[in-house]
Structure formats: structure tokens, C-alpha cells
Length: 302
Image (cartoon, rainbow, N blue to C red; front, side, top):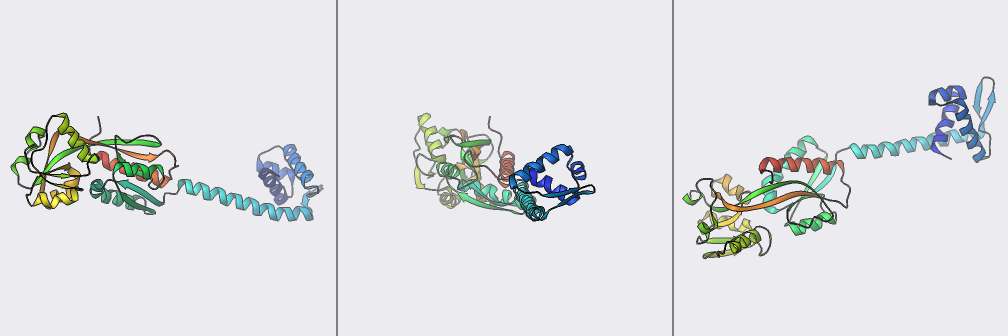
């Protein structure tokens, strides 16, 4: 028994006519009669009493009509629910961001999504790229911003961008005046507050750059795990730190910090989704808006 046969049967029963049903269904009447005949053969019963004025359902036909209408209605509901799910933009979207990046762009993303898609709920989760990549692959987060040097296996990579790495100091420091990048040799003797975890993220990039240049910072006054810890120390003029401008954004807005880029130091990042999990329309919309915000904030990676 096929859904097509049930649709044909219901059309004949409602019209009480094979001819009228064939016109309604846009099929040839012999083809319609053949399908009803196959249905009667399968059910081992006669479904219609045929006479010169039309075709009337038998008792078995009336019972089938009731059930067939219910089945067809249910299948249409299922179809519409699936189509709605495919086109409806709503639900929860989990987003993985580095803490400093989250502080800079999460509010912008939330504002855009609330305006355009009020039925989407955003769940922001923080972490460094290795952890965020694992969360992507395992389906814990739907979209994340990762360092470009992560393993691309099982990922779908999207928009990429570059953020300069800067020297961060107290507002008013003359060394931080101007936009011309500083050379590593100009900062090697400064009192530095080293932020980050060794061999990870920004700290790893900075330490490799110093090593490649044959330089070693001569005046490390403190080491901290996060830029968040370093910011108040820098604002009190206890030293400088090396970080992304986004990590110093709050201090810049408040007028306590200033930044100046360091020559050839930058962090390359990319928007990524898991290749193992099919995205919802909500995930795709949020990914597009996240990518747009990042492109507006940062220059495109060359």
C-alpha cells in the first residue's frame, strides 16, 4: 500500500467519480483505475460500488477512507514540521571564543542576533583554540573562532582575519604615541609583564618571535596567566604587557591603557564549524553574522 494509492483512493471517494478524480489529480483515468484495482487486490476487498452515476465507497471503502484521511493528514503534518524546521531560524547556538575576543565582539553579535532573529538564544563559551577545536568536533559548540594553526581535520573553515599583536601600556606613555609599529629590539629592555600560558596562544607567538630575532627580554617583572590579570598592573604603570588590542579594549575605552602594534607580530584566526555535525539554519545565520563582525573589526588575512 502506497501513499500515492491512498491519495488516489481518497480523491475518488470524495468525488464519487473516477473521471472527476482523474481530472483533479491530473492523471489519466485508466492509470487511476489501475492503481485503485491494485489497492483492492492487496486489501482483498471491493472499495467502490460502481454505477452509471459514479462510484460510491463500500463499507470497507468507508472504513479505509476514514483511516486514509487520517494517515494523509499525519504525513502532511510531518512534512510541514520538517520543512518548518529547515526554514525556521530559532533555537540555541553555542559559540566558542577566546576570552579576549569574546569581551570585544560578543555584545555586538548578541545585539545583531536579537534584532534579526529574536528566537535564537546564544550561548557563549570561552577557551583557547585547542579546547575550542575539541568542543567543535565533539559537538559541544556549533561555531568557534580558532587560531589558524589548528589541525583542520573534521572542520569546515570559513572567514579568516588577522589581529595585530601590540605593546600595551598606561595611557599617556610617550612610547605608545603614533601608529608606526615598534621593533622587538625597542621593547626587549622594557619592564614586561608576560601574560599567557607558555607554549600557547599569544605568548607562544611572542616567545618564538624573540627567539627568531636572537633576543631575550631582559626585564620580566611578572608572569600572569591572563591578560585580564595584567591589565590593572599595566594601568598602574608597573610594566608593559604584550597582547592583542582587543584584550586591552576595555582599558582603552576607560582611558587607562594605550597600545602600539609590534612589527611583524600578529595572530591569524578563522571561523570554523564541525564537518561532523549538520548545522541548523540558526547556526548558519549566526556564523554569517559573526564572520561579518570580524571582517569589519579586522583586515582580511592576506
